[in-house]
Image 1: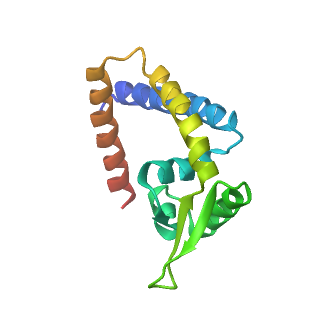
Image 2: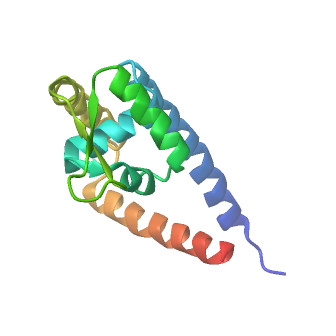
Image 3: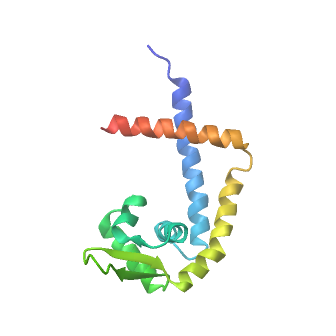
Amino acid sequence: MNDNKEELKALTILLRASSSVEKVVKKDMSSHGLNATEFTVLELLFNKGRQPIQMIGKQILLASSSITYVVDRLEEKGFVNRIADKFDRRVTFCELTDEGDKLMHEIFPKHAEKIAELFQECTQEEIKALQVTLKKVGYKAVDLLS
C-alpha cells in the first residue's frame, strides 16, 4: 500500500494556511467597509478599467445573478457606474466612478502591503516555487473533477 503521509500532511497545511490567509484578507477588506466580493470587483476595475459586467463574473468566478447584486450594491455606494454599450444593447459595462477610483487609490496600496506582509518570511524563490506548486495541484484538481 502506498504511504501518503507527506501528501496528507501537505493537504492539511495547505487548507489551514488557506483558511488563515482568507481570514486576514477578509479582515483587511472589511476594514474598508467592503465585503470580499465588492473589494474584488473594485480591484478588477481599478487594475483593468471598464469591463463588461458578464466578464466581471467570469473573471472573479461569480454567478451572473450574484454579480448583478454586487454591482447594484457598489452603485448604491457610489463606487461604480453602469454604461450601456452603444453598439450592442445586450452588453453593459461597469467602471469606477471618481469616488470609487479615489477609494481604491487610497486603500489598494494598503491592501497590497498587507498581502506582502503575509509573504515576508518567504524569499522570492520560495514564492515563485509556491506559485508553481499550487498551479500544479490546482490543475490536477481540475483534471480530477472532469
